[in-house]
Length: 362
Image (cartoon, rainbow, N blue to C red; front, side):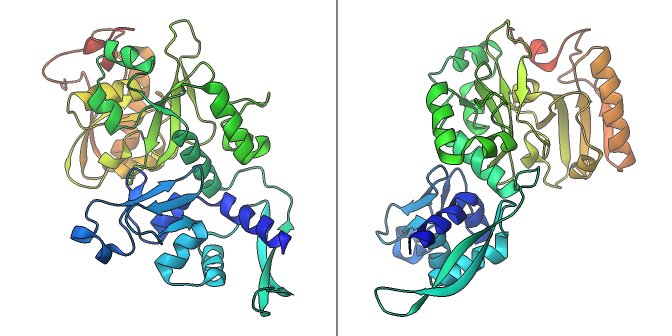
């Protein structure tokens, strides 16, 4: 039966418990969701009592002593299934990562009750060049669990100097790599170098890429789950200043504002400018750079009135016109900042960006 444990562990390690919980219908917000047995709780567990540890792949209800376990147990409880049924549900819902498939065969007896038990075995395939997106999200979630809040870190005064404050750090879940060596080691122990390189976190030398870029801006989806991130150096002489996670950018920064409801949106260049606008109460989303806007993103802006306000330099103006053209081709009402459109009546001067315009110091 030793092979069963190894192979079930392979299944669990390949899945994100957060994404599984979402697929089961639980509304996961900031690593918590309401207990499946809400009737046991005061007020129906209005304040969610179940916590998820993505890095450990487990969940725990702080009220119900029997509501805890791994991703398979979560399926058992949520779907009222036995162990085999839960494994089958996971196979059907998620499929398997490219590196292996799971197949059930009744070949070994259960030593406790004498009945046949399924043996889950690994069938190896030639790895595909791209990592499975579910596994990649799992790694990003585990990575962020290892990081520190901005408050109390060297990033806090750096952000304050740029006029970006605590309320925005917390809202947008900014994080800082305090102990690089520990995070580097824990990721390697958990996932292995090959997978981490495919996920885009580790370099060809076998190390976490963000040794100098320790301030992280997560790209949160509509359910506050980080799917991508940009990393920033807070040292003035580091080049480049920003370092993206390798791979495709899935959506604009602060995409939750693109909800289909009518309203204004300011489209900014980079996370710092976007955070500057958010800190002042403006509805803002960001793109990583002037050439990074994708035409398929234009439909996300439906029903919005968009002001494209990239950096006021030659590259920024050229990029802004390209973005404007893509938005207008998609039927989105959009204007360029500076062409009859300003923010609070002020006009950026040549070479300025949003952050410097609001008083941010580099």
